[in-house]
Length: 258
Ligand SMILES: Nc1ncnc2c1ncn2[C@@H]1O[C@H](COP(=O)(O)OP(=O)(O)OP(=O)(O)O)[C@@H](O)[C@H]1O
Ligand SMILES: [Mg+2]
Image (cartoon, rainbow, N blue to C red; front, side, top):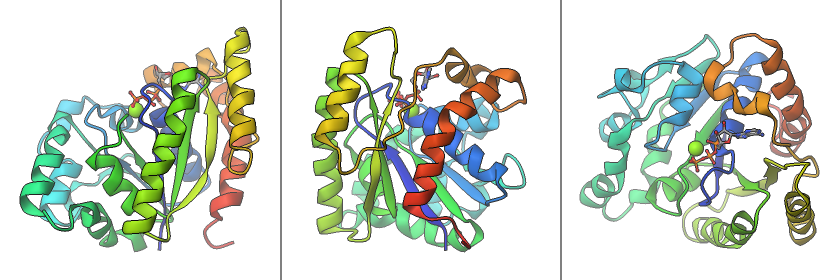
């Protein structure tokens, strides 16, 4: 059964998608079978991992999978090991669909949908939008772990407690097996004293759950959104920046078949 990991925080631009995408790609590179689920109507993870025009997925996304109750027909095979359940703008209609069709157990819908394929994968990586809304809650209810993303700024810092409250709500009411894998400090800008200061403040306040490894702001990492995972020197630089976090994440969530 796959280990399911959600990447989230309601603060926008905190590297949720970039980190989820790189993690999914690194797992697939190691030979793990990975399903990346895009729960954000911005469809950035879909773009990143497929390098296709999002419009090509119209009518074949995670929203249709949720409506069908089974994702099988909607999974796009980016590579042999890396599969994607894509998203597009229409996923913004998810909340309305959930409340209309599943008013009593809407939060468990994604969990049920993914249960049909979780034996086909080692890891399921779920990217979420910058919100505390339904796509995030249904993702938390479907997951074993959540990685809390945090760029190094005041507004990201103040978002963490509220995000952790949402996680606690999901744990208490719906999914008692959900665990916080950790808080990842990302986009640390070594040239800015405020960025380094917030990295320290976050590290001190969340010392029990923070990843000791930070991910610095690197132009090469930003350009993954342009180049995808085509082999190039920049990709190597971006991946090496993420490697320490990735290894710690694997230690915390466990390697399948170890
Ligand atoms: N470590 C990094 N170094 C440099 N640029 C980065 C890094 N991580 C992410 N970026 C860039 O920062 C921007 C925000 O990243 P990303 O889209 O992954 O964040 P997000 O949290 O998913 O955003 P949203 O809340 O809109 O979903 C993107 O342009 C991305 O390419
Ligand atoms: Mg995103």
